Image 1 (cartoon, rainbow, N blue to C red):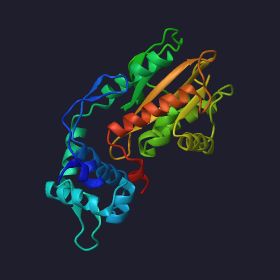
Image 2 (image 1 turned 45 degrees about the vertical axis):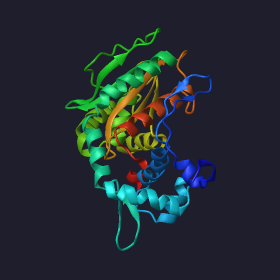
Image 3 (image 1 turned 30 degrees about the vertical axis):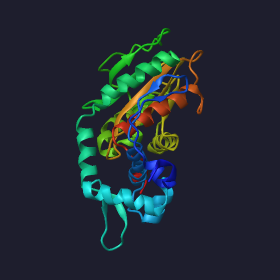
Length: 288
């Protein structure tokens, strides 16, 4: 049968080894198109928390059930997909799990964040940092200044207050209370003793602040830790949905867009979500 008489589905599955011309005439590396088409099924299964019927899976992947079934048969033979013998539903198989675990074993979240934040800093010219939870609290482990450094007097190894910094609020909002309770109690006691302290004085006020962080999926402060210094801190989650680290951007009030939905919020949020994805995080699975 000639290519001109092949059905559309088979044409879509045809392999190609020739280099194609890109938009501007440059050579684009070609691949095996049928693999890319079949990958759509795996992509759908990855994004769904439950096993799927063939018709629903095919529809989500943008192909006919008959075409999807051919791919799924091969994926089952390879262990990438499994099918429940009773319900007939499909889900990711054991080899897909092994691939995911192998990838996660090679992932260094701080290293990935350093690479991503370097690009963010260079593009938006804002001071950025990375924080992880240490034995004393939220700890700065990486810091890169902009061309107009914020006079924040922060350095590697600094432990941030839970209630007086964007970084601290983020960790207080997402970590189990068993990890943060002692530190929260100490800081609340400090604010109660100081009549001029602007921080929260009751646990109810703390809970309201942390609920706001979770509602925005980000922490934001305006001149809280240091006058005229604004900051965002965004969560990066790991494969089991736990907070792995926080990425920080801060700057002076005159040069730092503190608005929700502004350029800095949008860019840092996108950076955090990409890092979470690279660490294996699935918000669909976490919410299920």
